[in-house]
Amino acid sequence: MQTKHNWTKEEILEIYNRPFLDLVYEAATIHRANKDYSEVQISSLISIKTGGCPEDCSYCPQAARYHTDVDVHAMMKVDEVLDAAKKAKEGGASRLCMGAAWREVRDNRDFDKVIDMVKAVNEMDMEVCCTLGMLNADQAQRLADAGLYAYNHNLDTSEEDYKRIISTRTYDDRLQTIENVRKAKLTVCSGGIIGLGETVNDRVSMLRVLANMPQHPESVPVNALVPVKGTPLENQPRVPIWDMVRMIATARIIMPKTCVRLSAGRTEMSTIEQALCFMAGANSIFAGDKLLTTPNPDFKDDMAMFELLGLTPRKAFKNGKPNQKAEEVTA
Ligand code: SAM
Ligand code: DTB
Ligand code: SF4
Image (tube, rainbow, N blue to C red; front, side, top):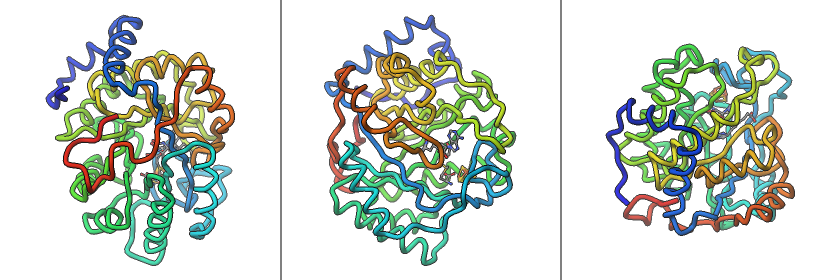
């Protein structure tokens, strides 16, 4: 299937606003054209450096300027990360995503440590993902050389709405890092959050930026805001499940080969609600009892859900390693 990269806002808005069941039916039909539609990719998150971040992302419990209950933690040791990776693998995860509360990567001893972590987890035959903030081209290449599989860098919201949510960096900064990640031939994981007080137009605008990239991100996380006490968005109401399903279905239709990740917010969702998300084309999740700092359903419950819904965890490196592939990774 050819992917399209010249979507207009009107086209995406028309899809997003379709009658709910028509939208889900169309997304499910596209999803089912993929022979592996019942496979779900499982990633486990680990916060290798927690809290104390200089940025002002208004949703984030790790921003130093907000007074949240998050305990600041210095960099974890390589051995601790390996223990967590082992536990995640045993629980069924094929990918480990290491997150750091950094604005950007600096070329210092902490980055050297991350490189060691990437090498060691890669040797365990797990896909390794990092989310460390902004990267330059050399840093992206160093991560790729160490065996990194994917880099997560979310757009979070629309360009128009960005300043309301984050003022300490620009949309262009975000796009530049994604370009650096692409140049190093890493796979791209980039998506956003709904429930920030954005409009439908903002959601569509963000999806359009993702879908019009020269190559679609291999993974698009759709997060529902987890409102955290002490952050400016602590009183935001819970995102309606209908909006979550609409976002997932729209992403599935406009980026048919991408892994669409049902990300933060699952603890507030019933199994039936999650089933609707999988029906609408979600084919990856974060599993493990914690996201970065907030709770997530535990492995046991997720495996019971997989059993009930007839889903299977996807094996690591199903599409080869990023530096070996000639063409776009398929979901
Ligand atoms: N500091 C790096 C950065 O900002 O790219 C990496 C870590 S940051 C915590 C990764 C992503 O987590 C953010 O881009 C945002 O999408 C998501 N996130 C953070 N707080 C969240 C919340 N309260 N609810 C939902 N998603 C959240
Ligand atoms: C993504 O899109 N969601 C994950 C991961 N990428 C790094 C993070 C969600 C964080 C939710 C808030 C927390 O646990 O701190
Ligand atoms: Fe820092 Fe990332 Fe949180 Fe923003 S989202 S405050 S950059 S950890």
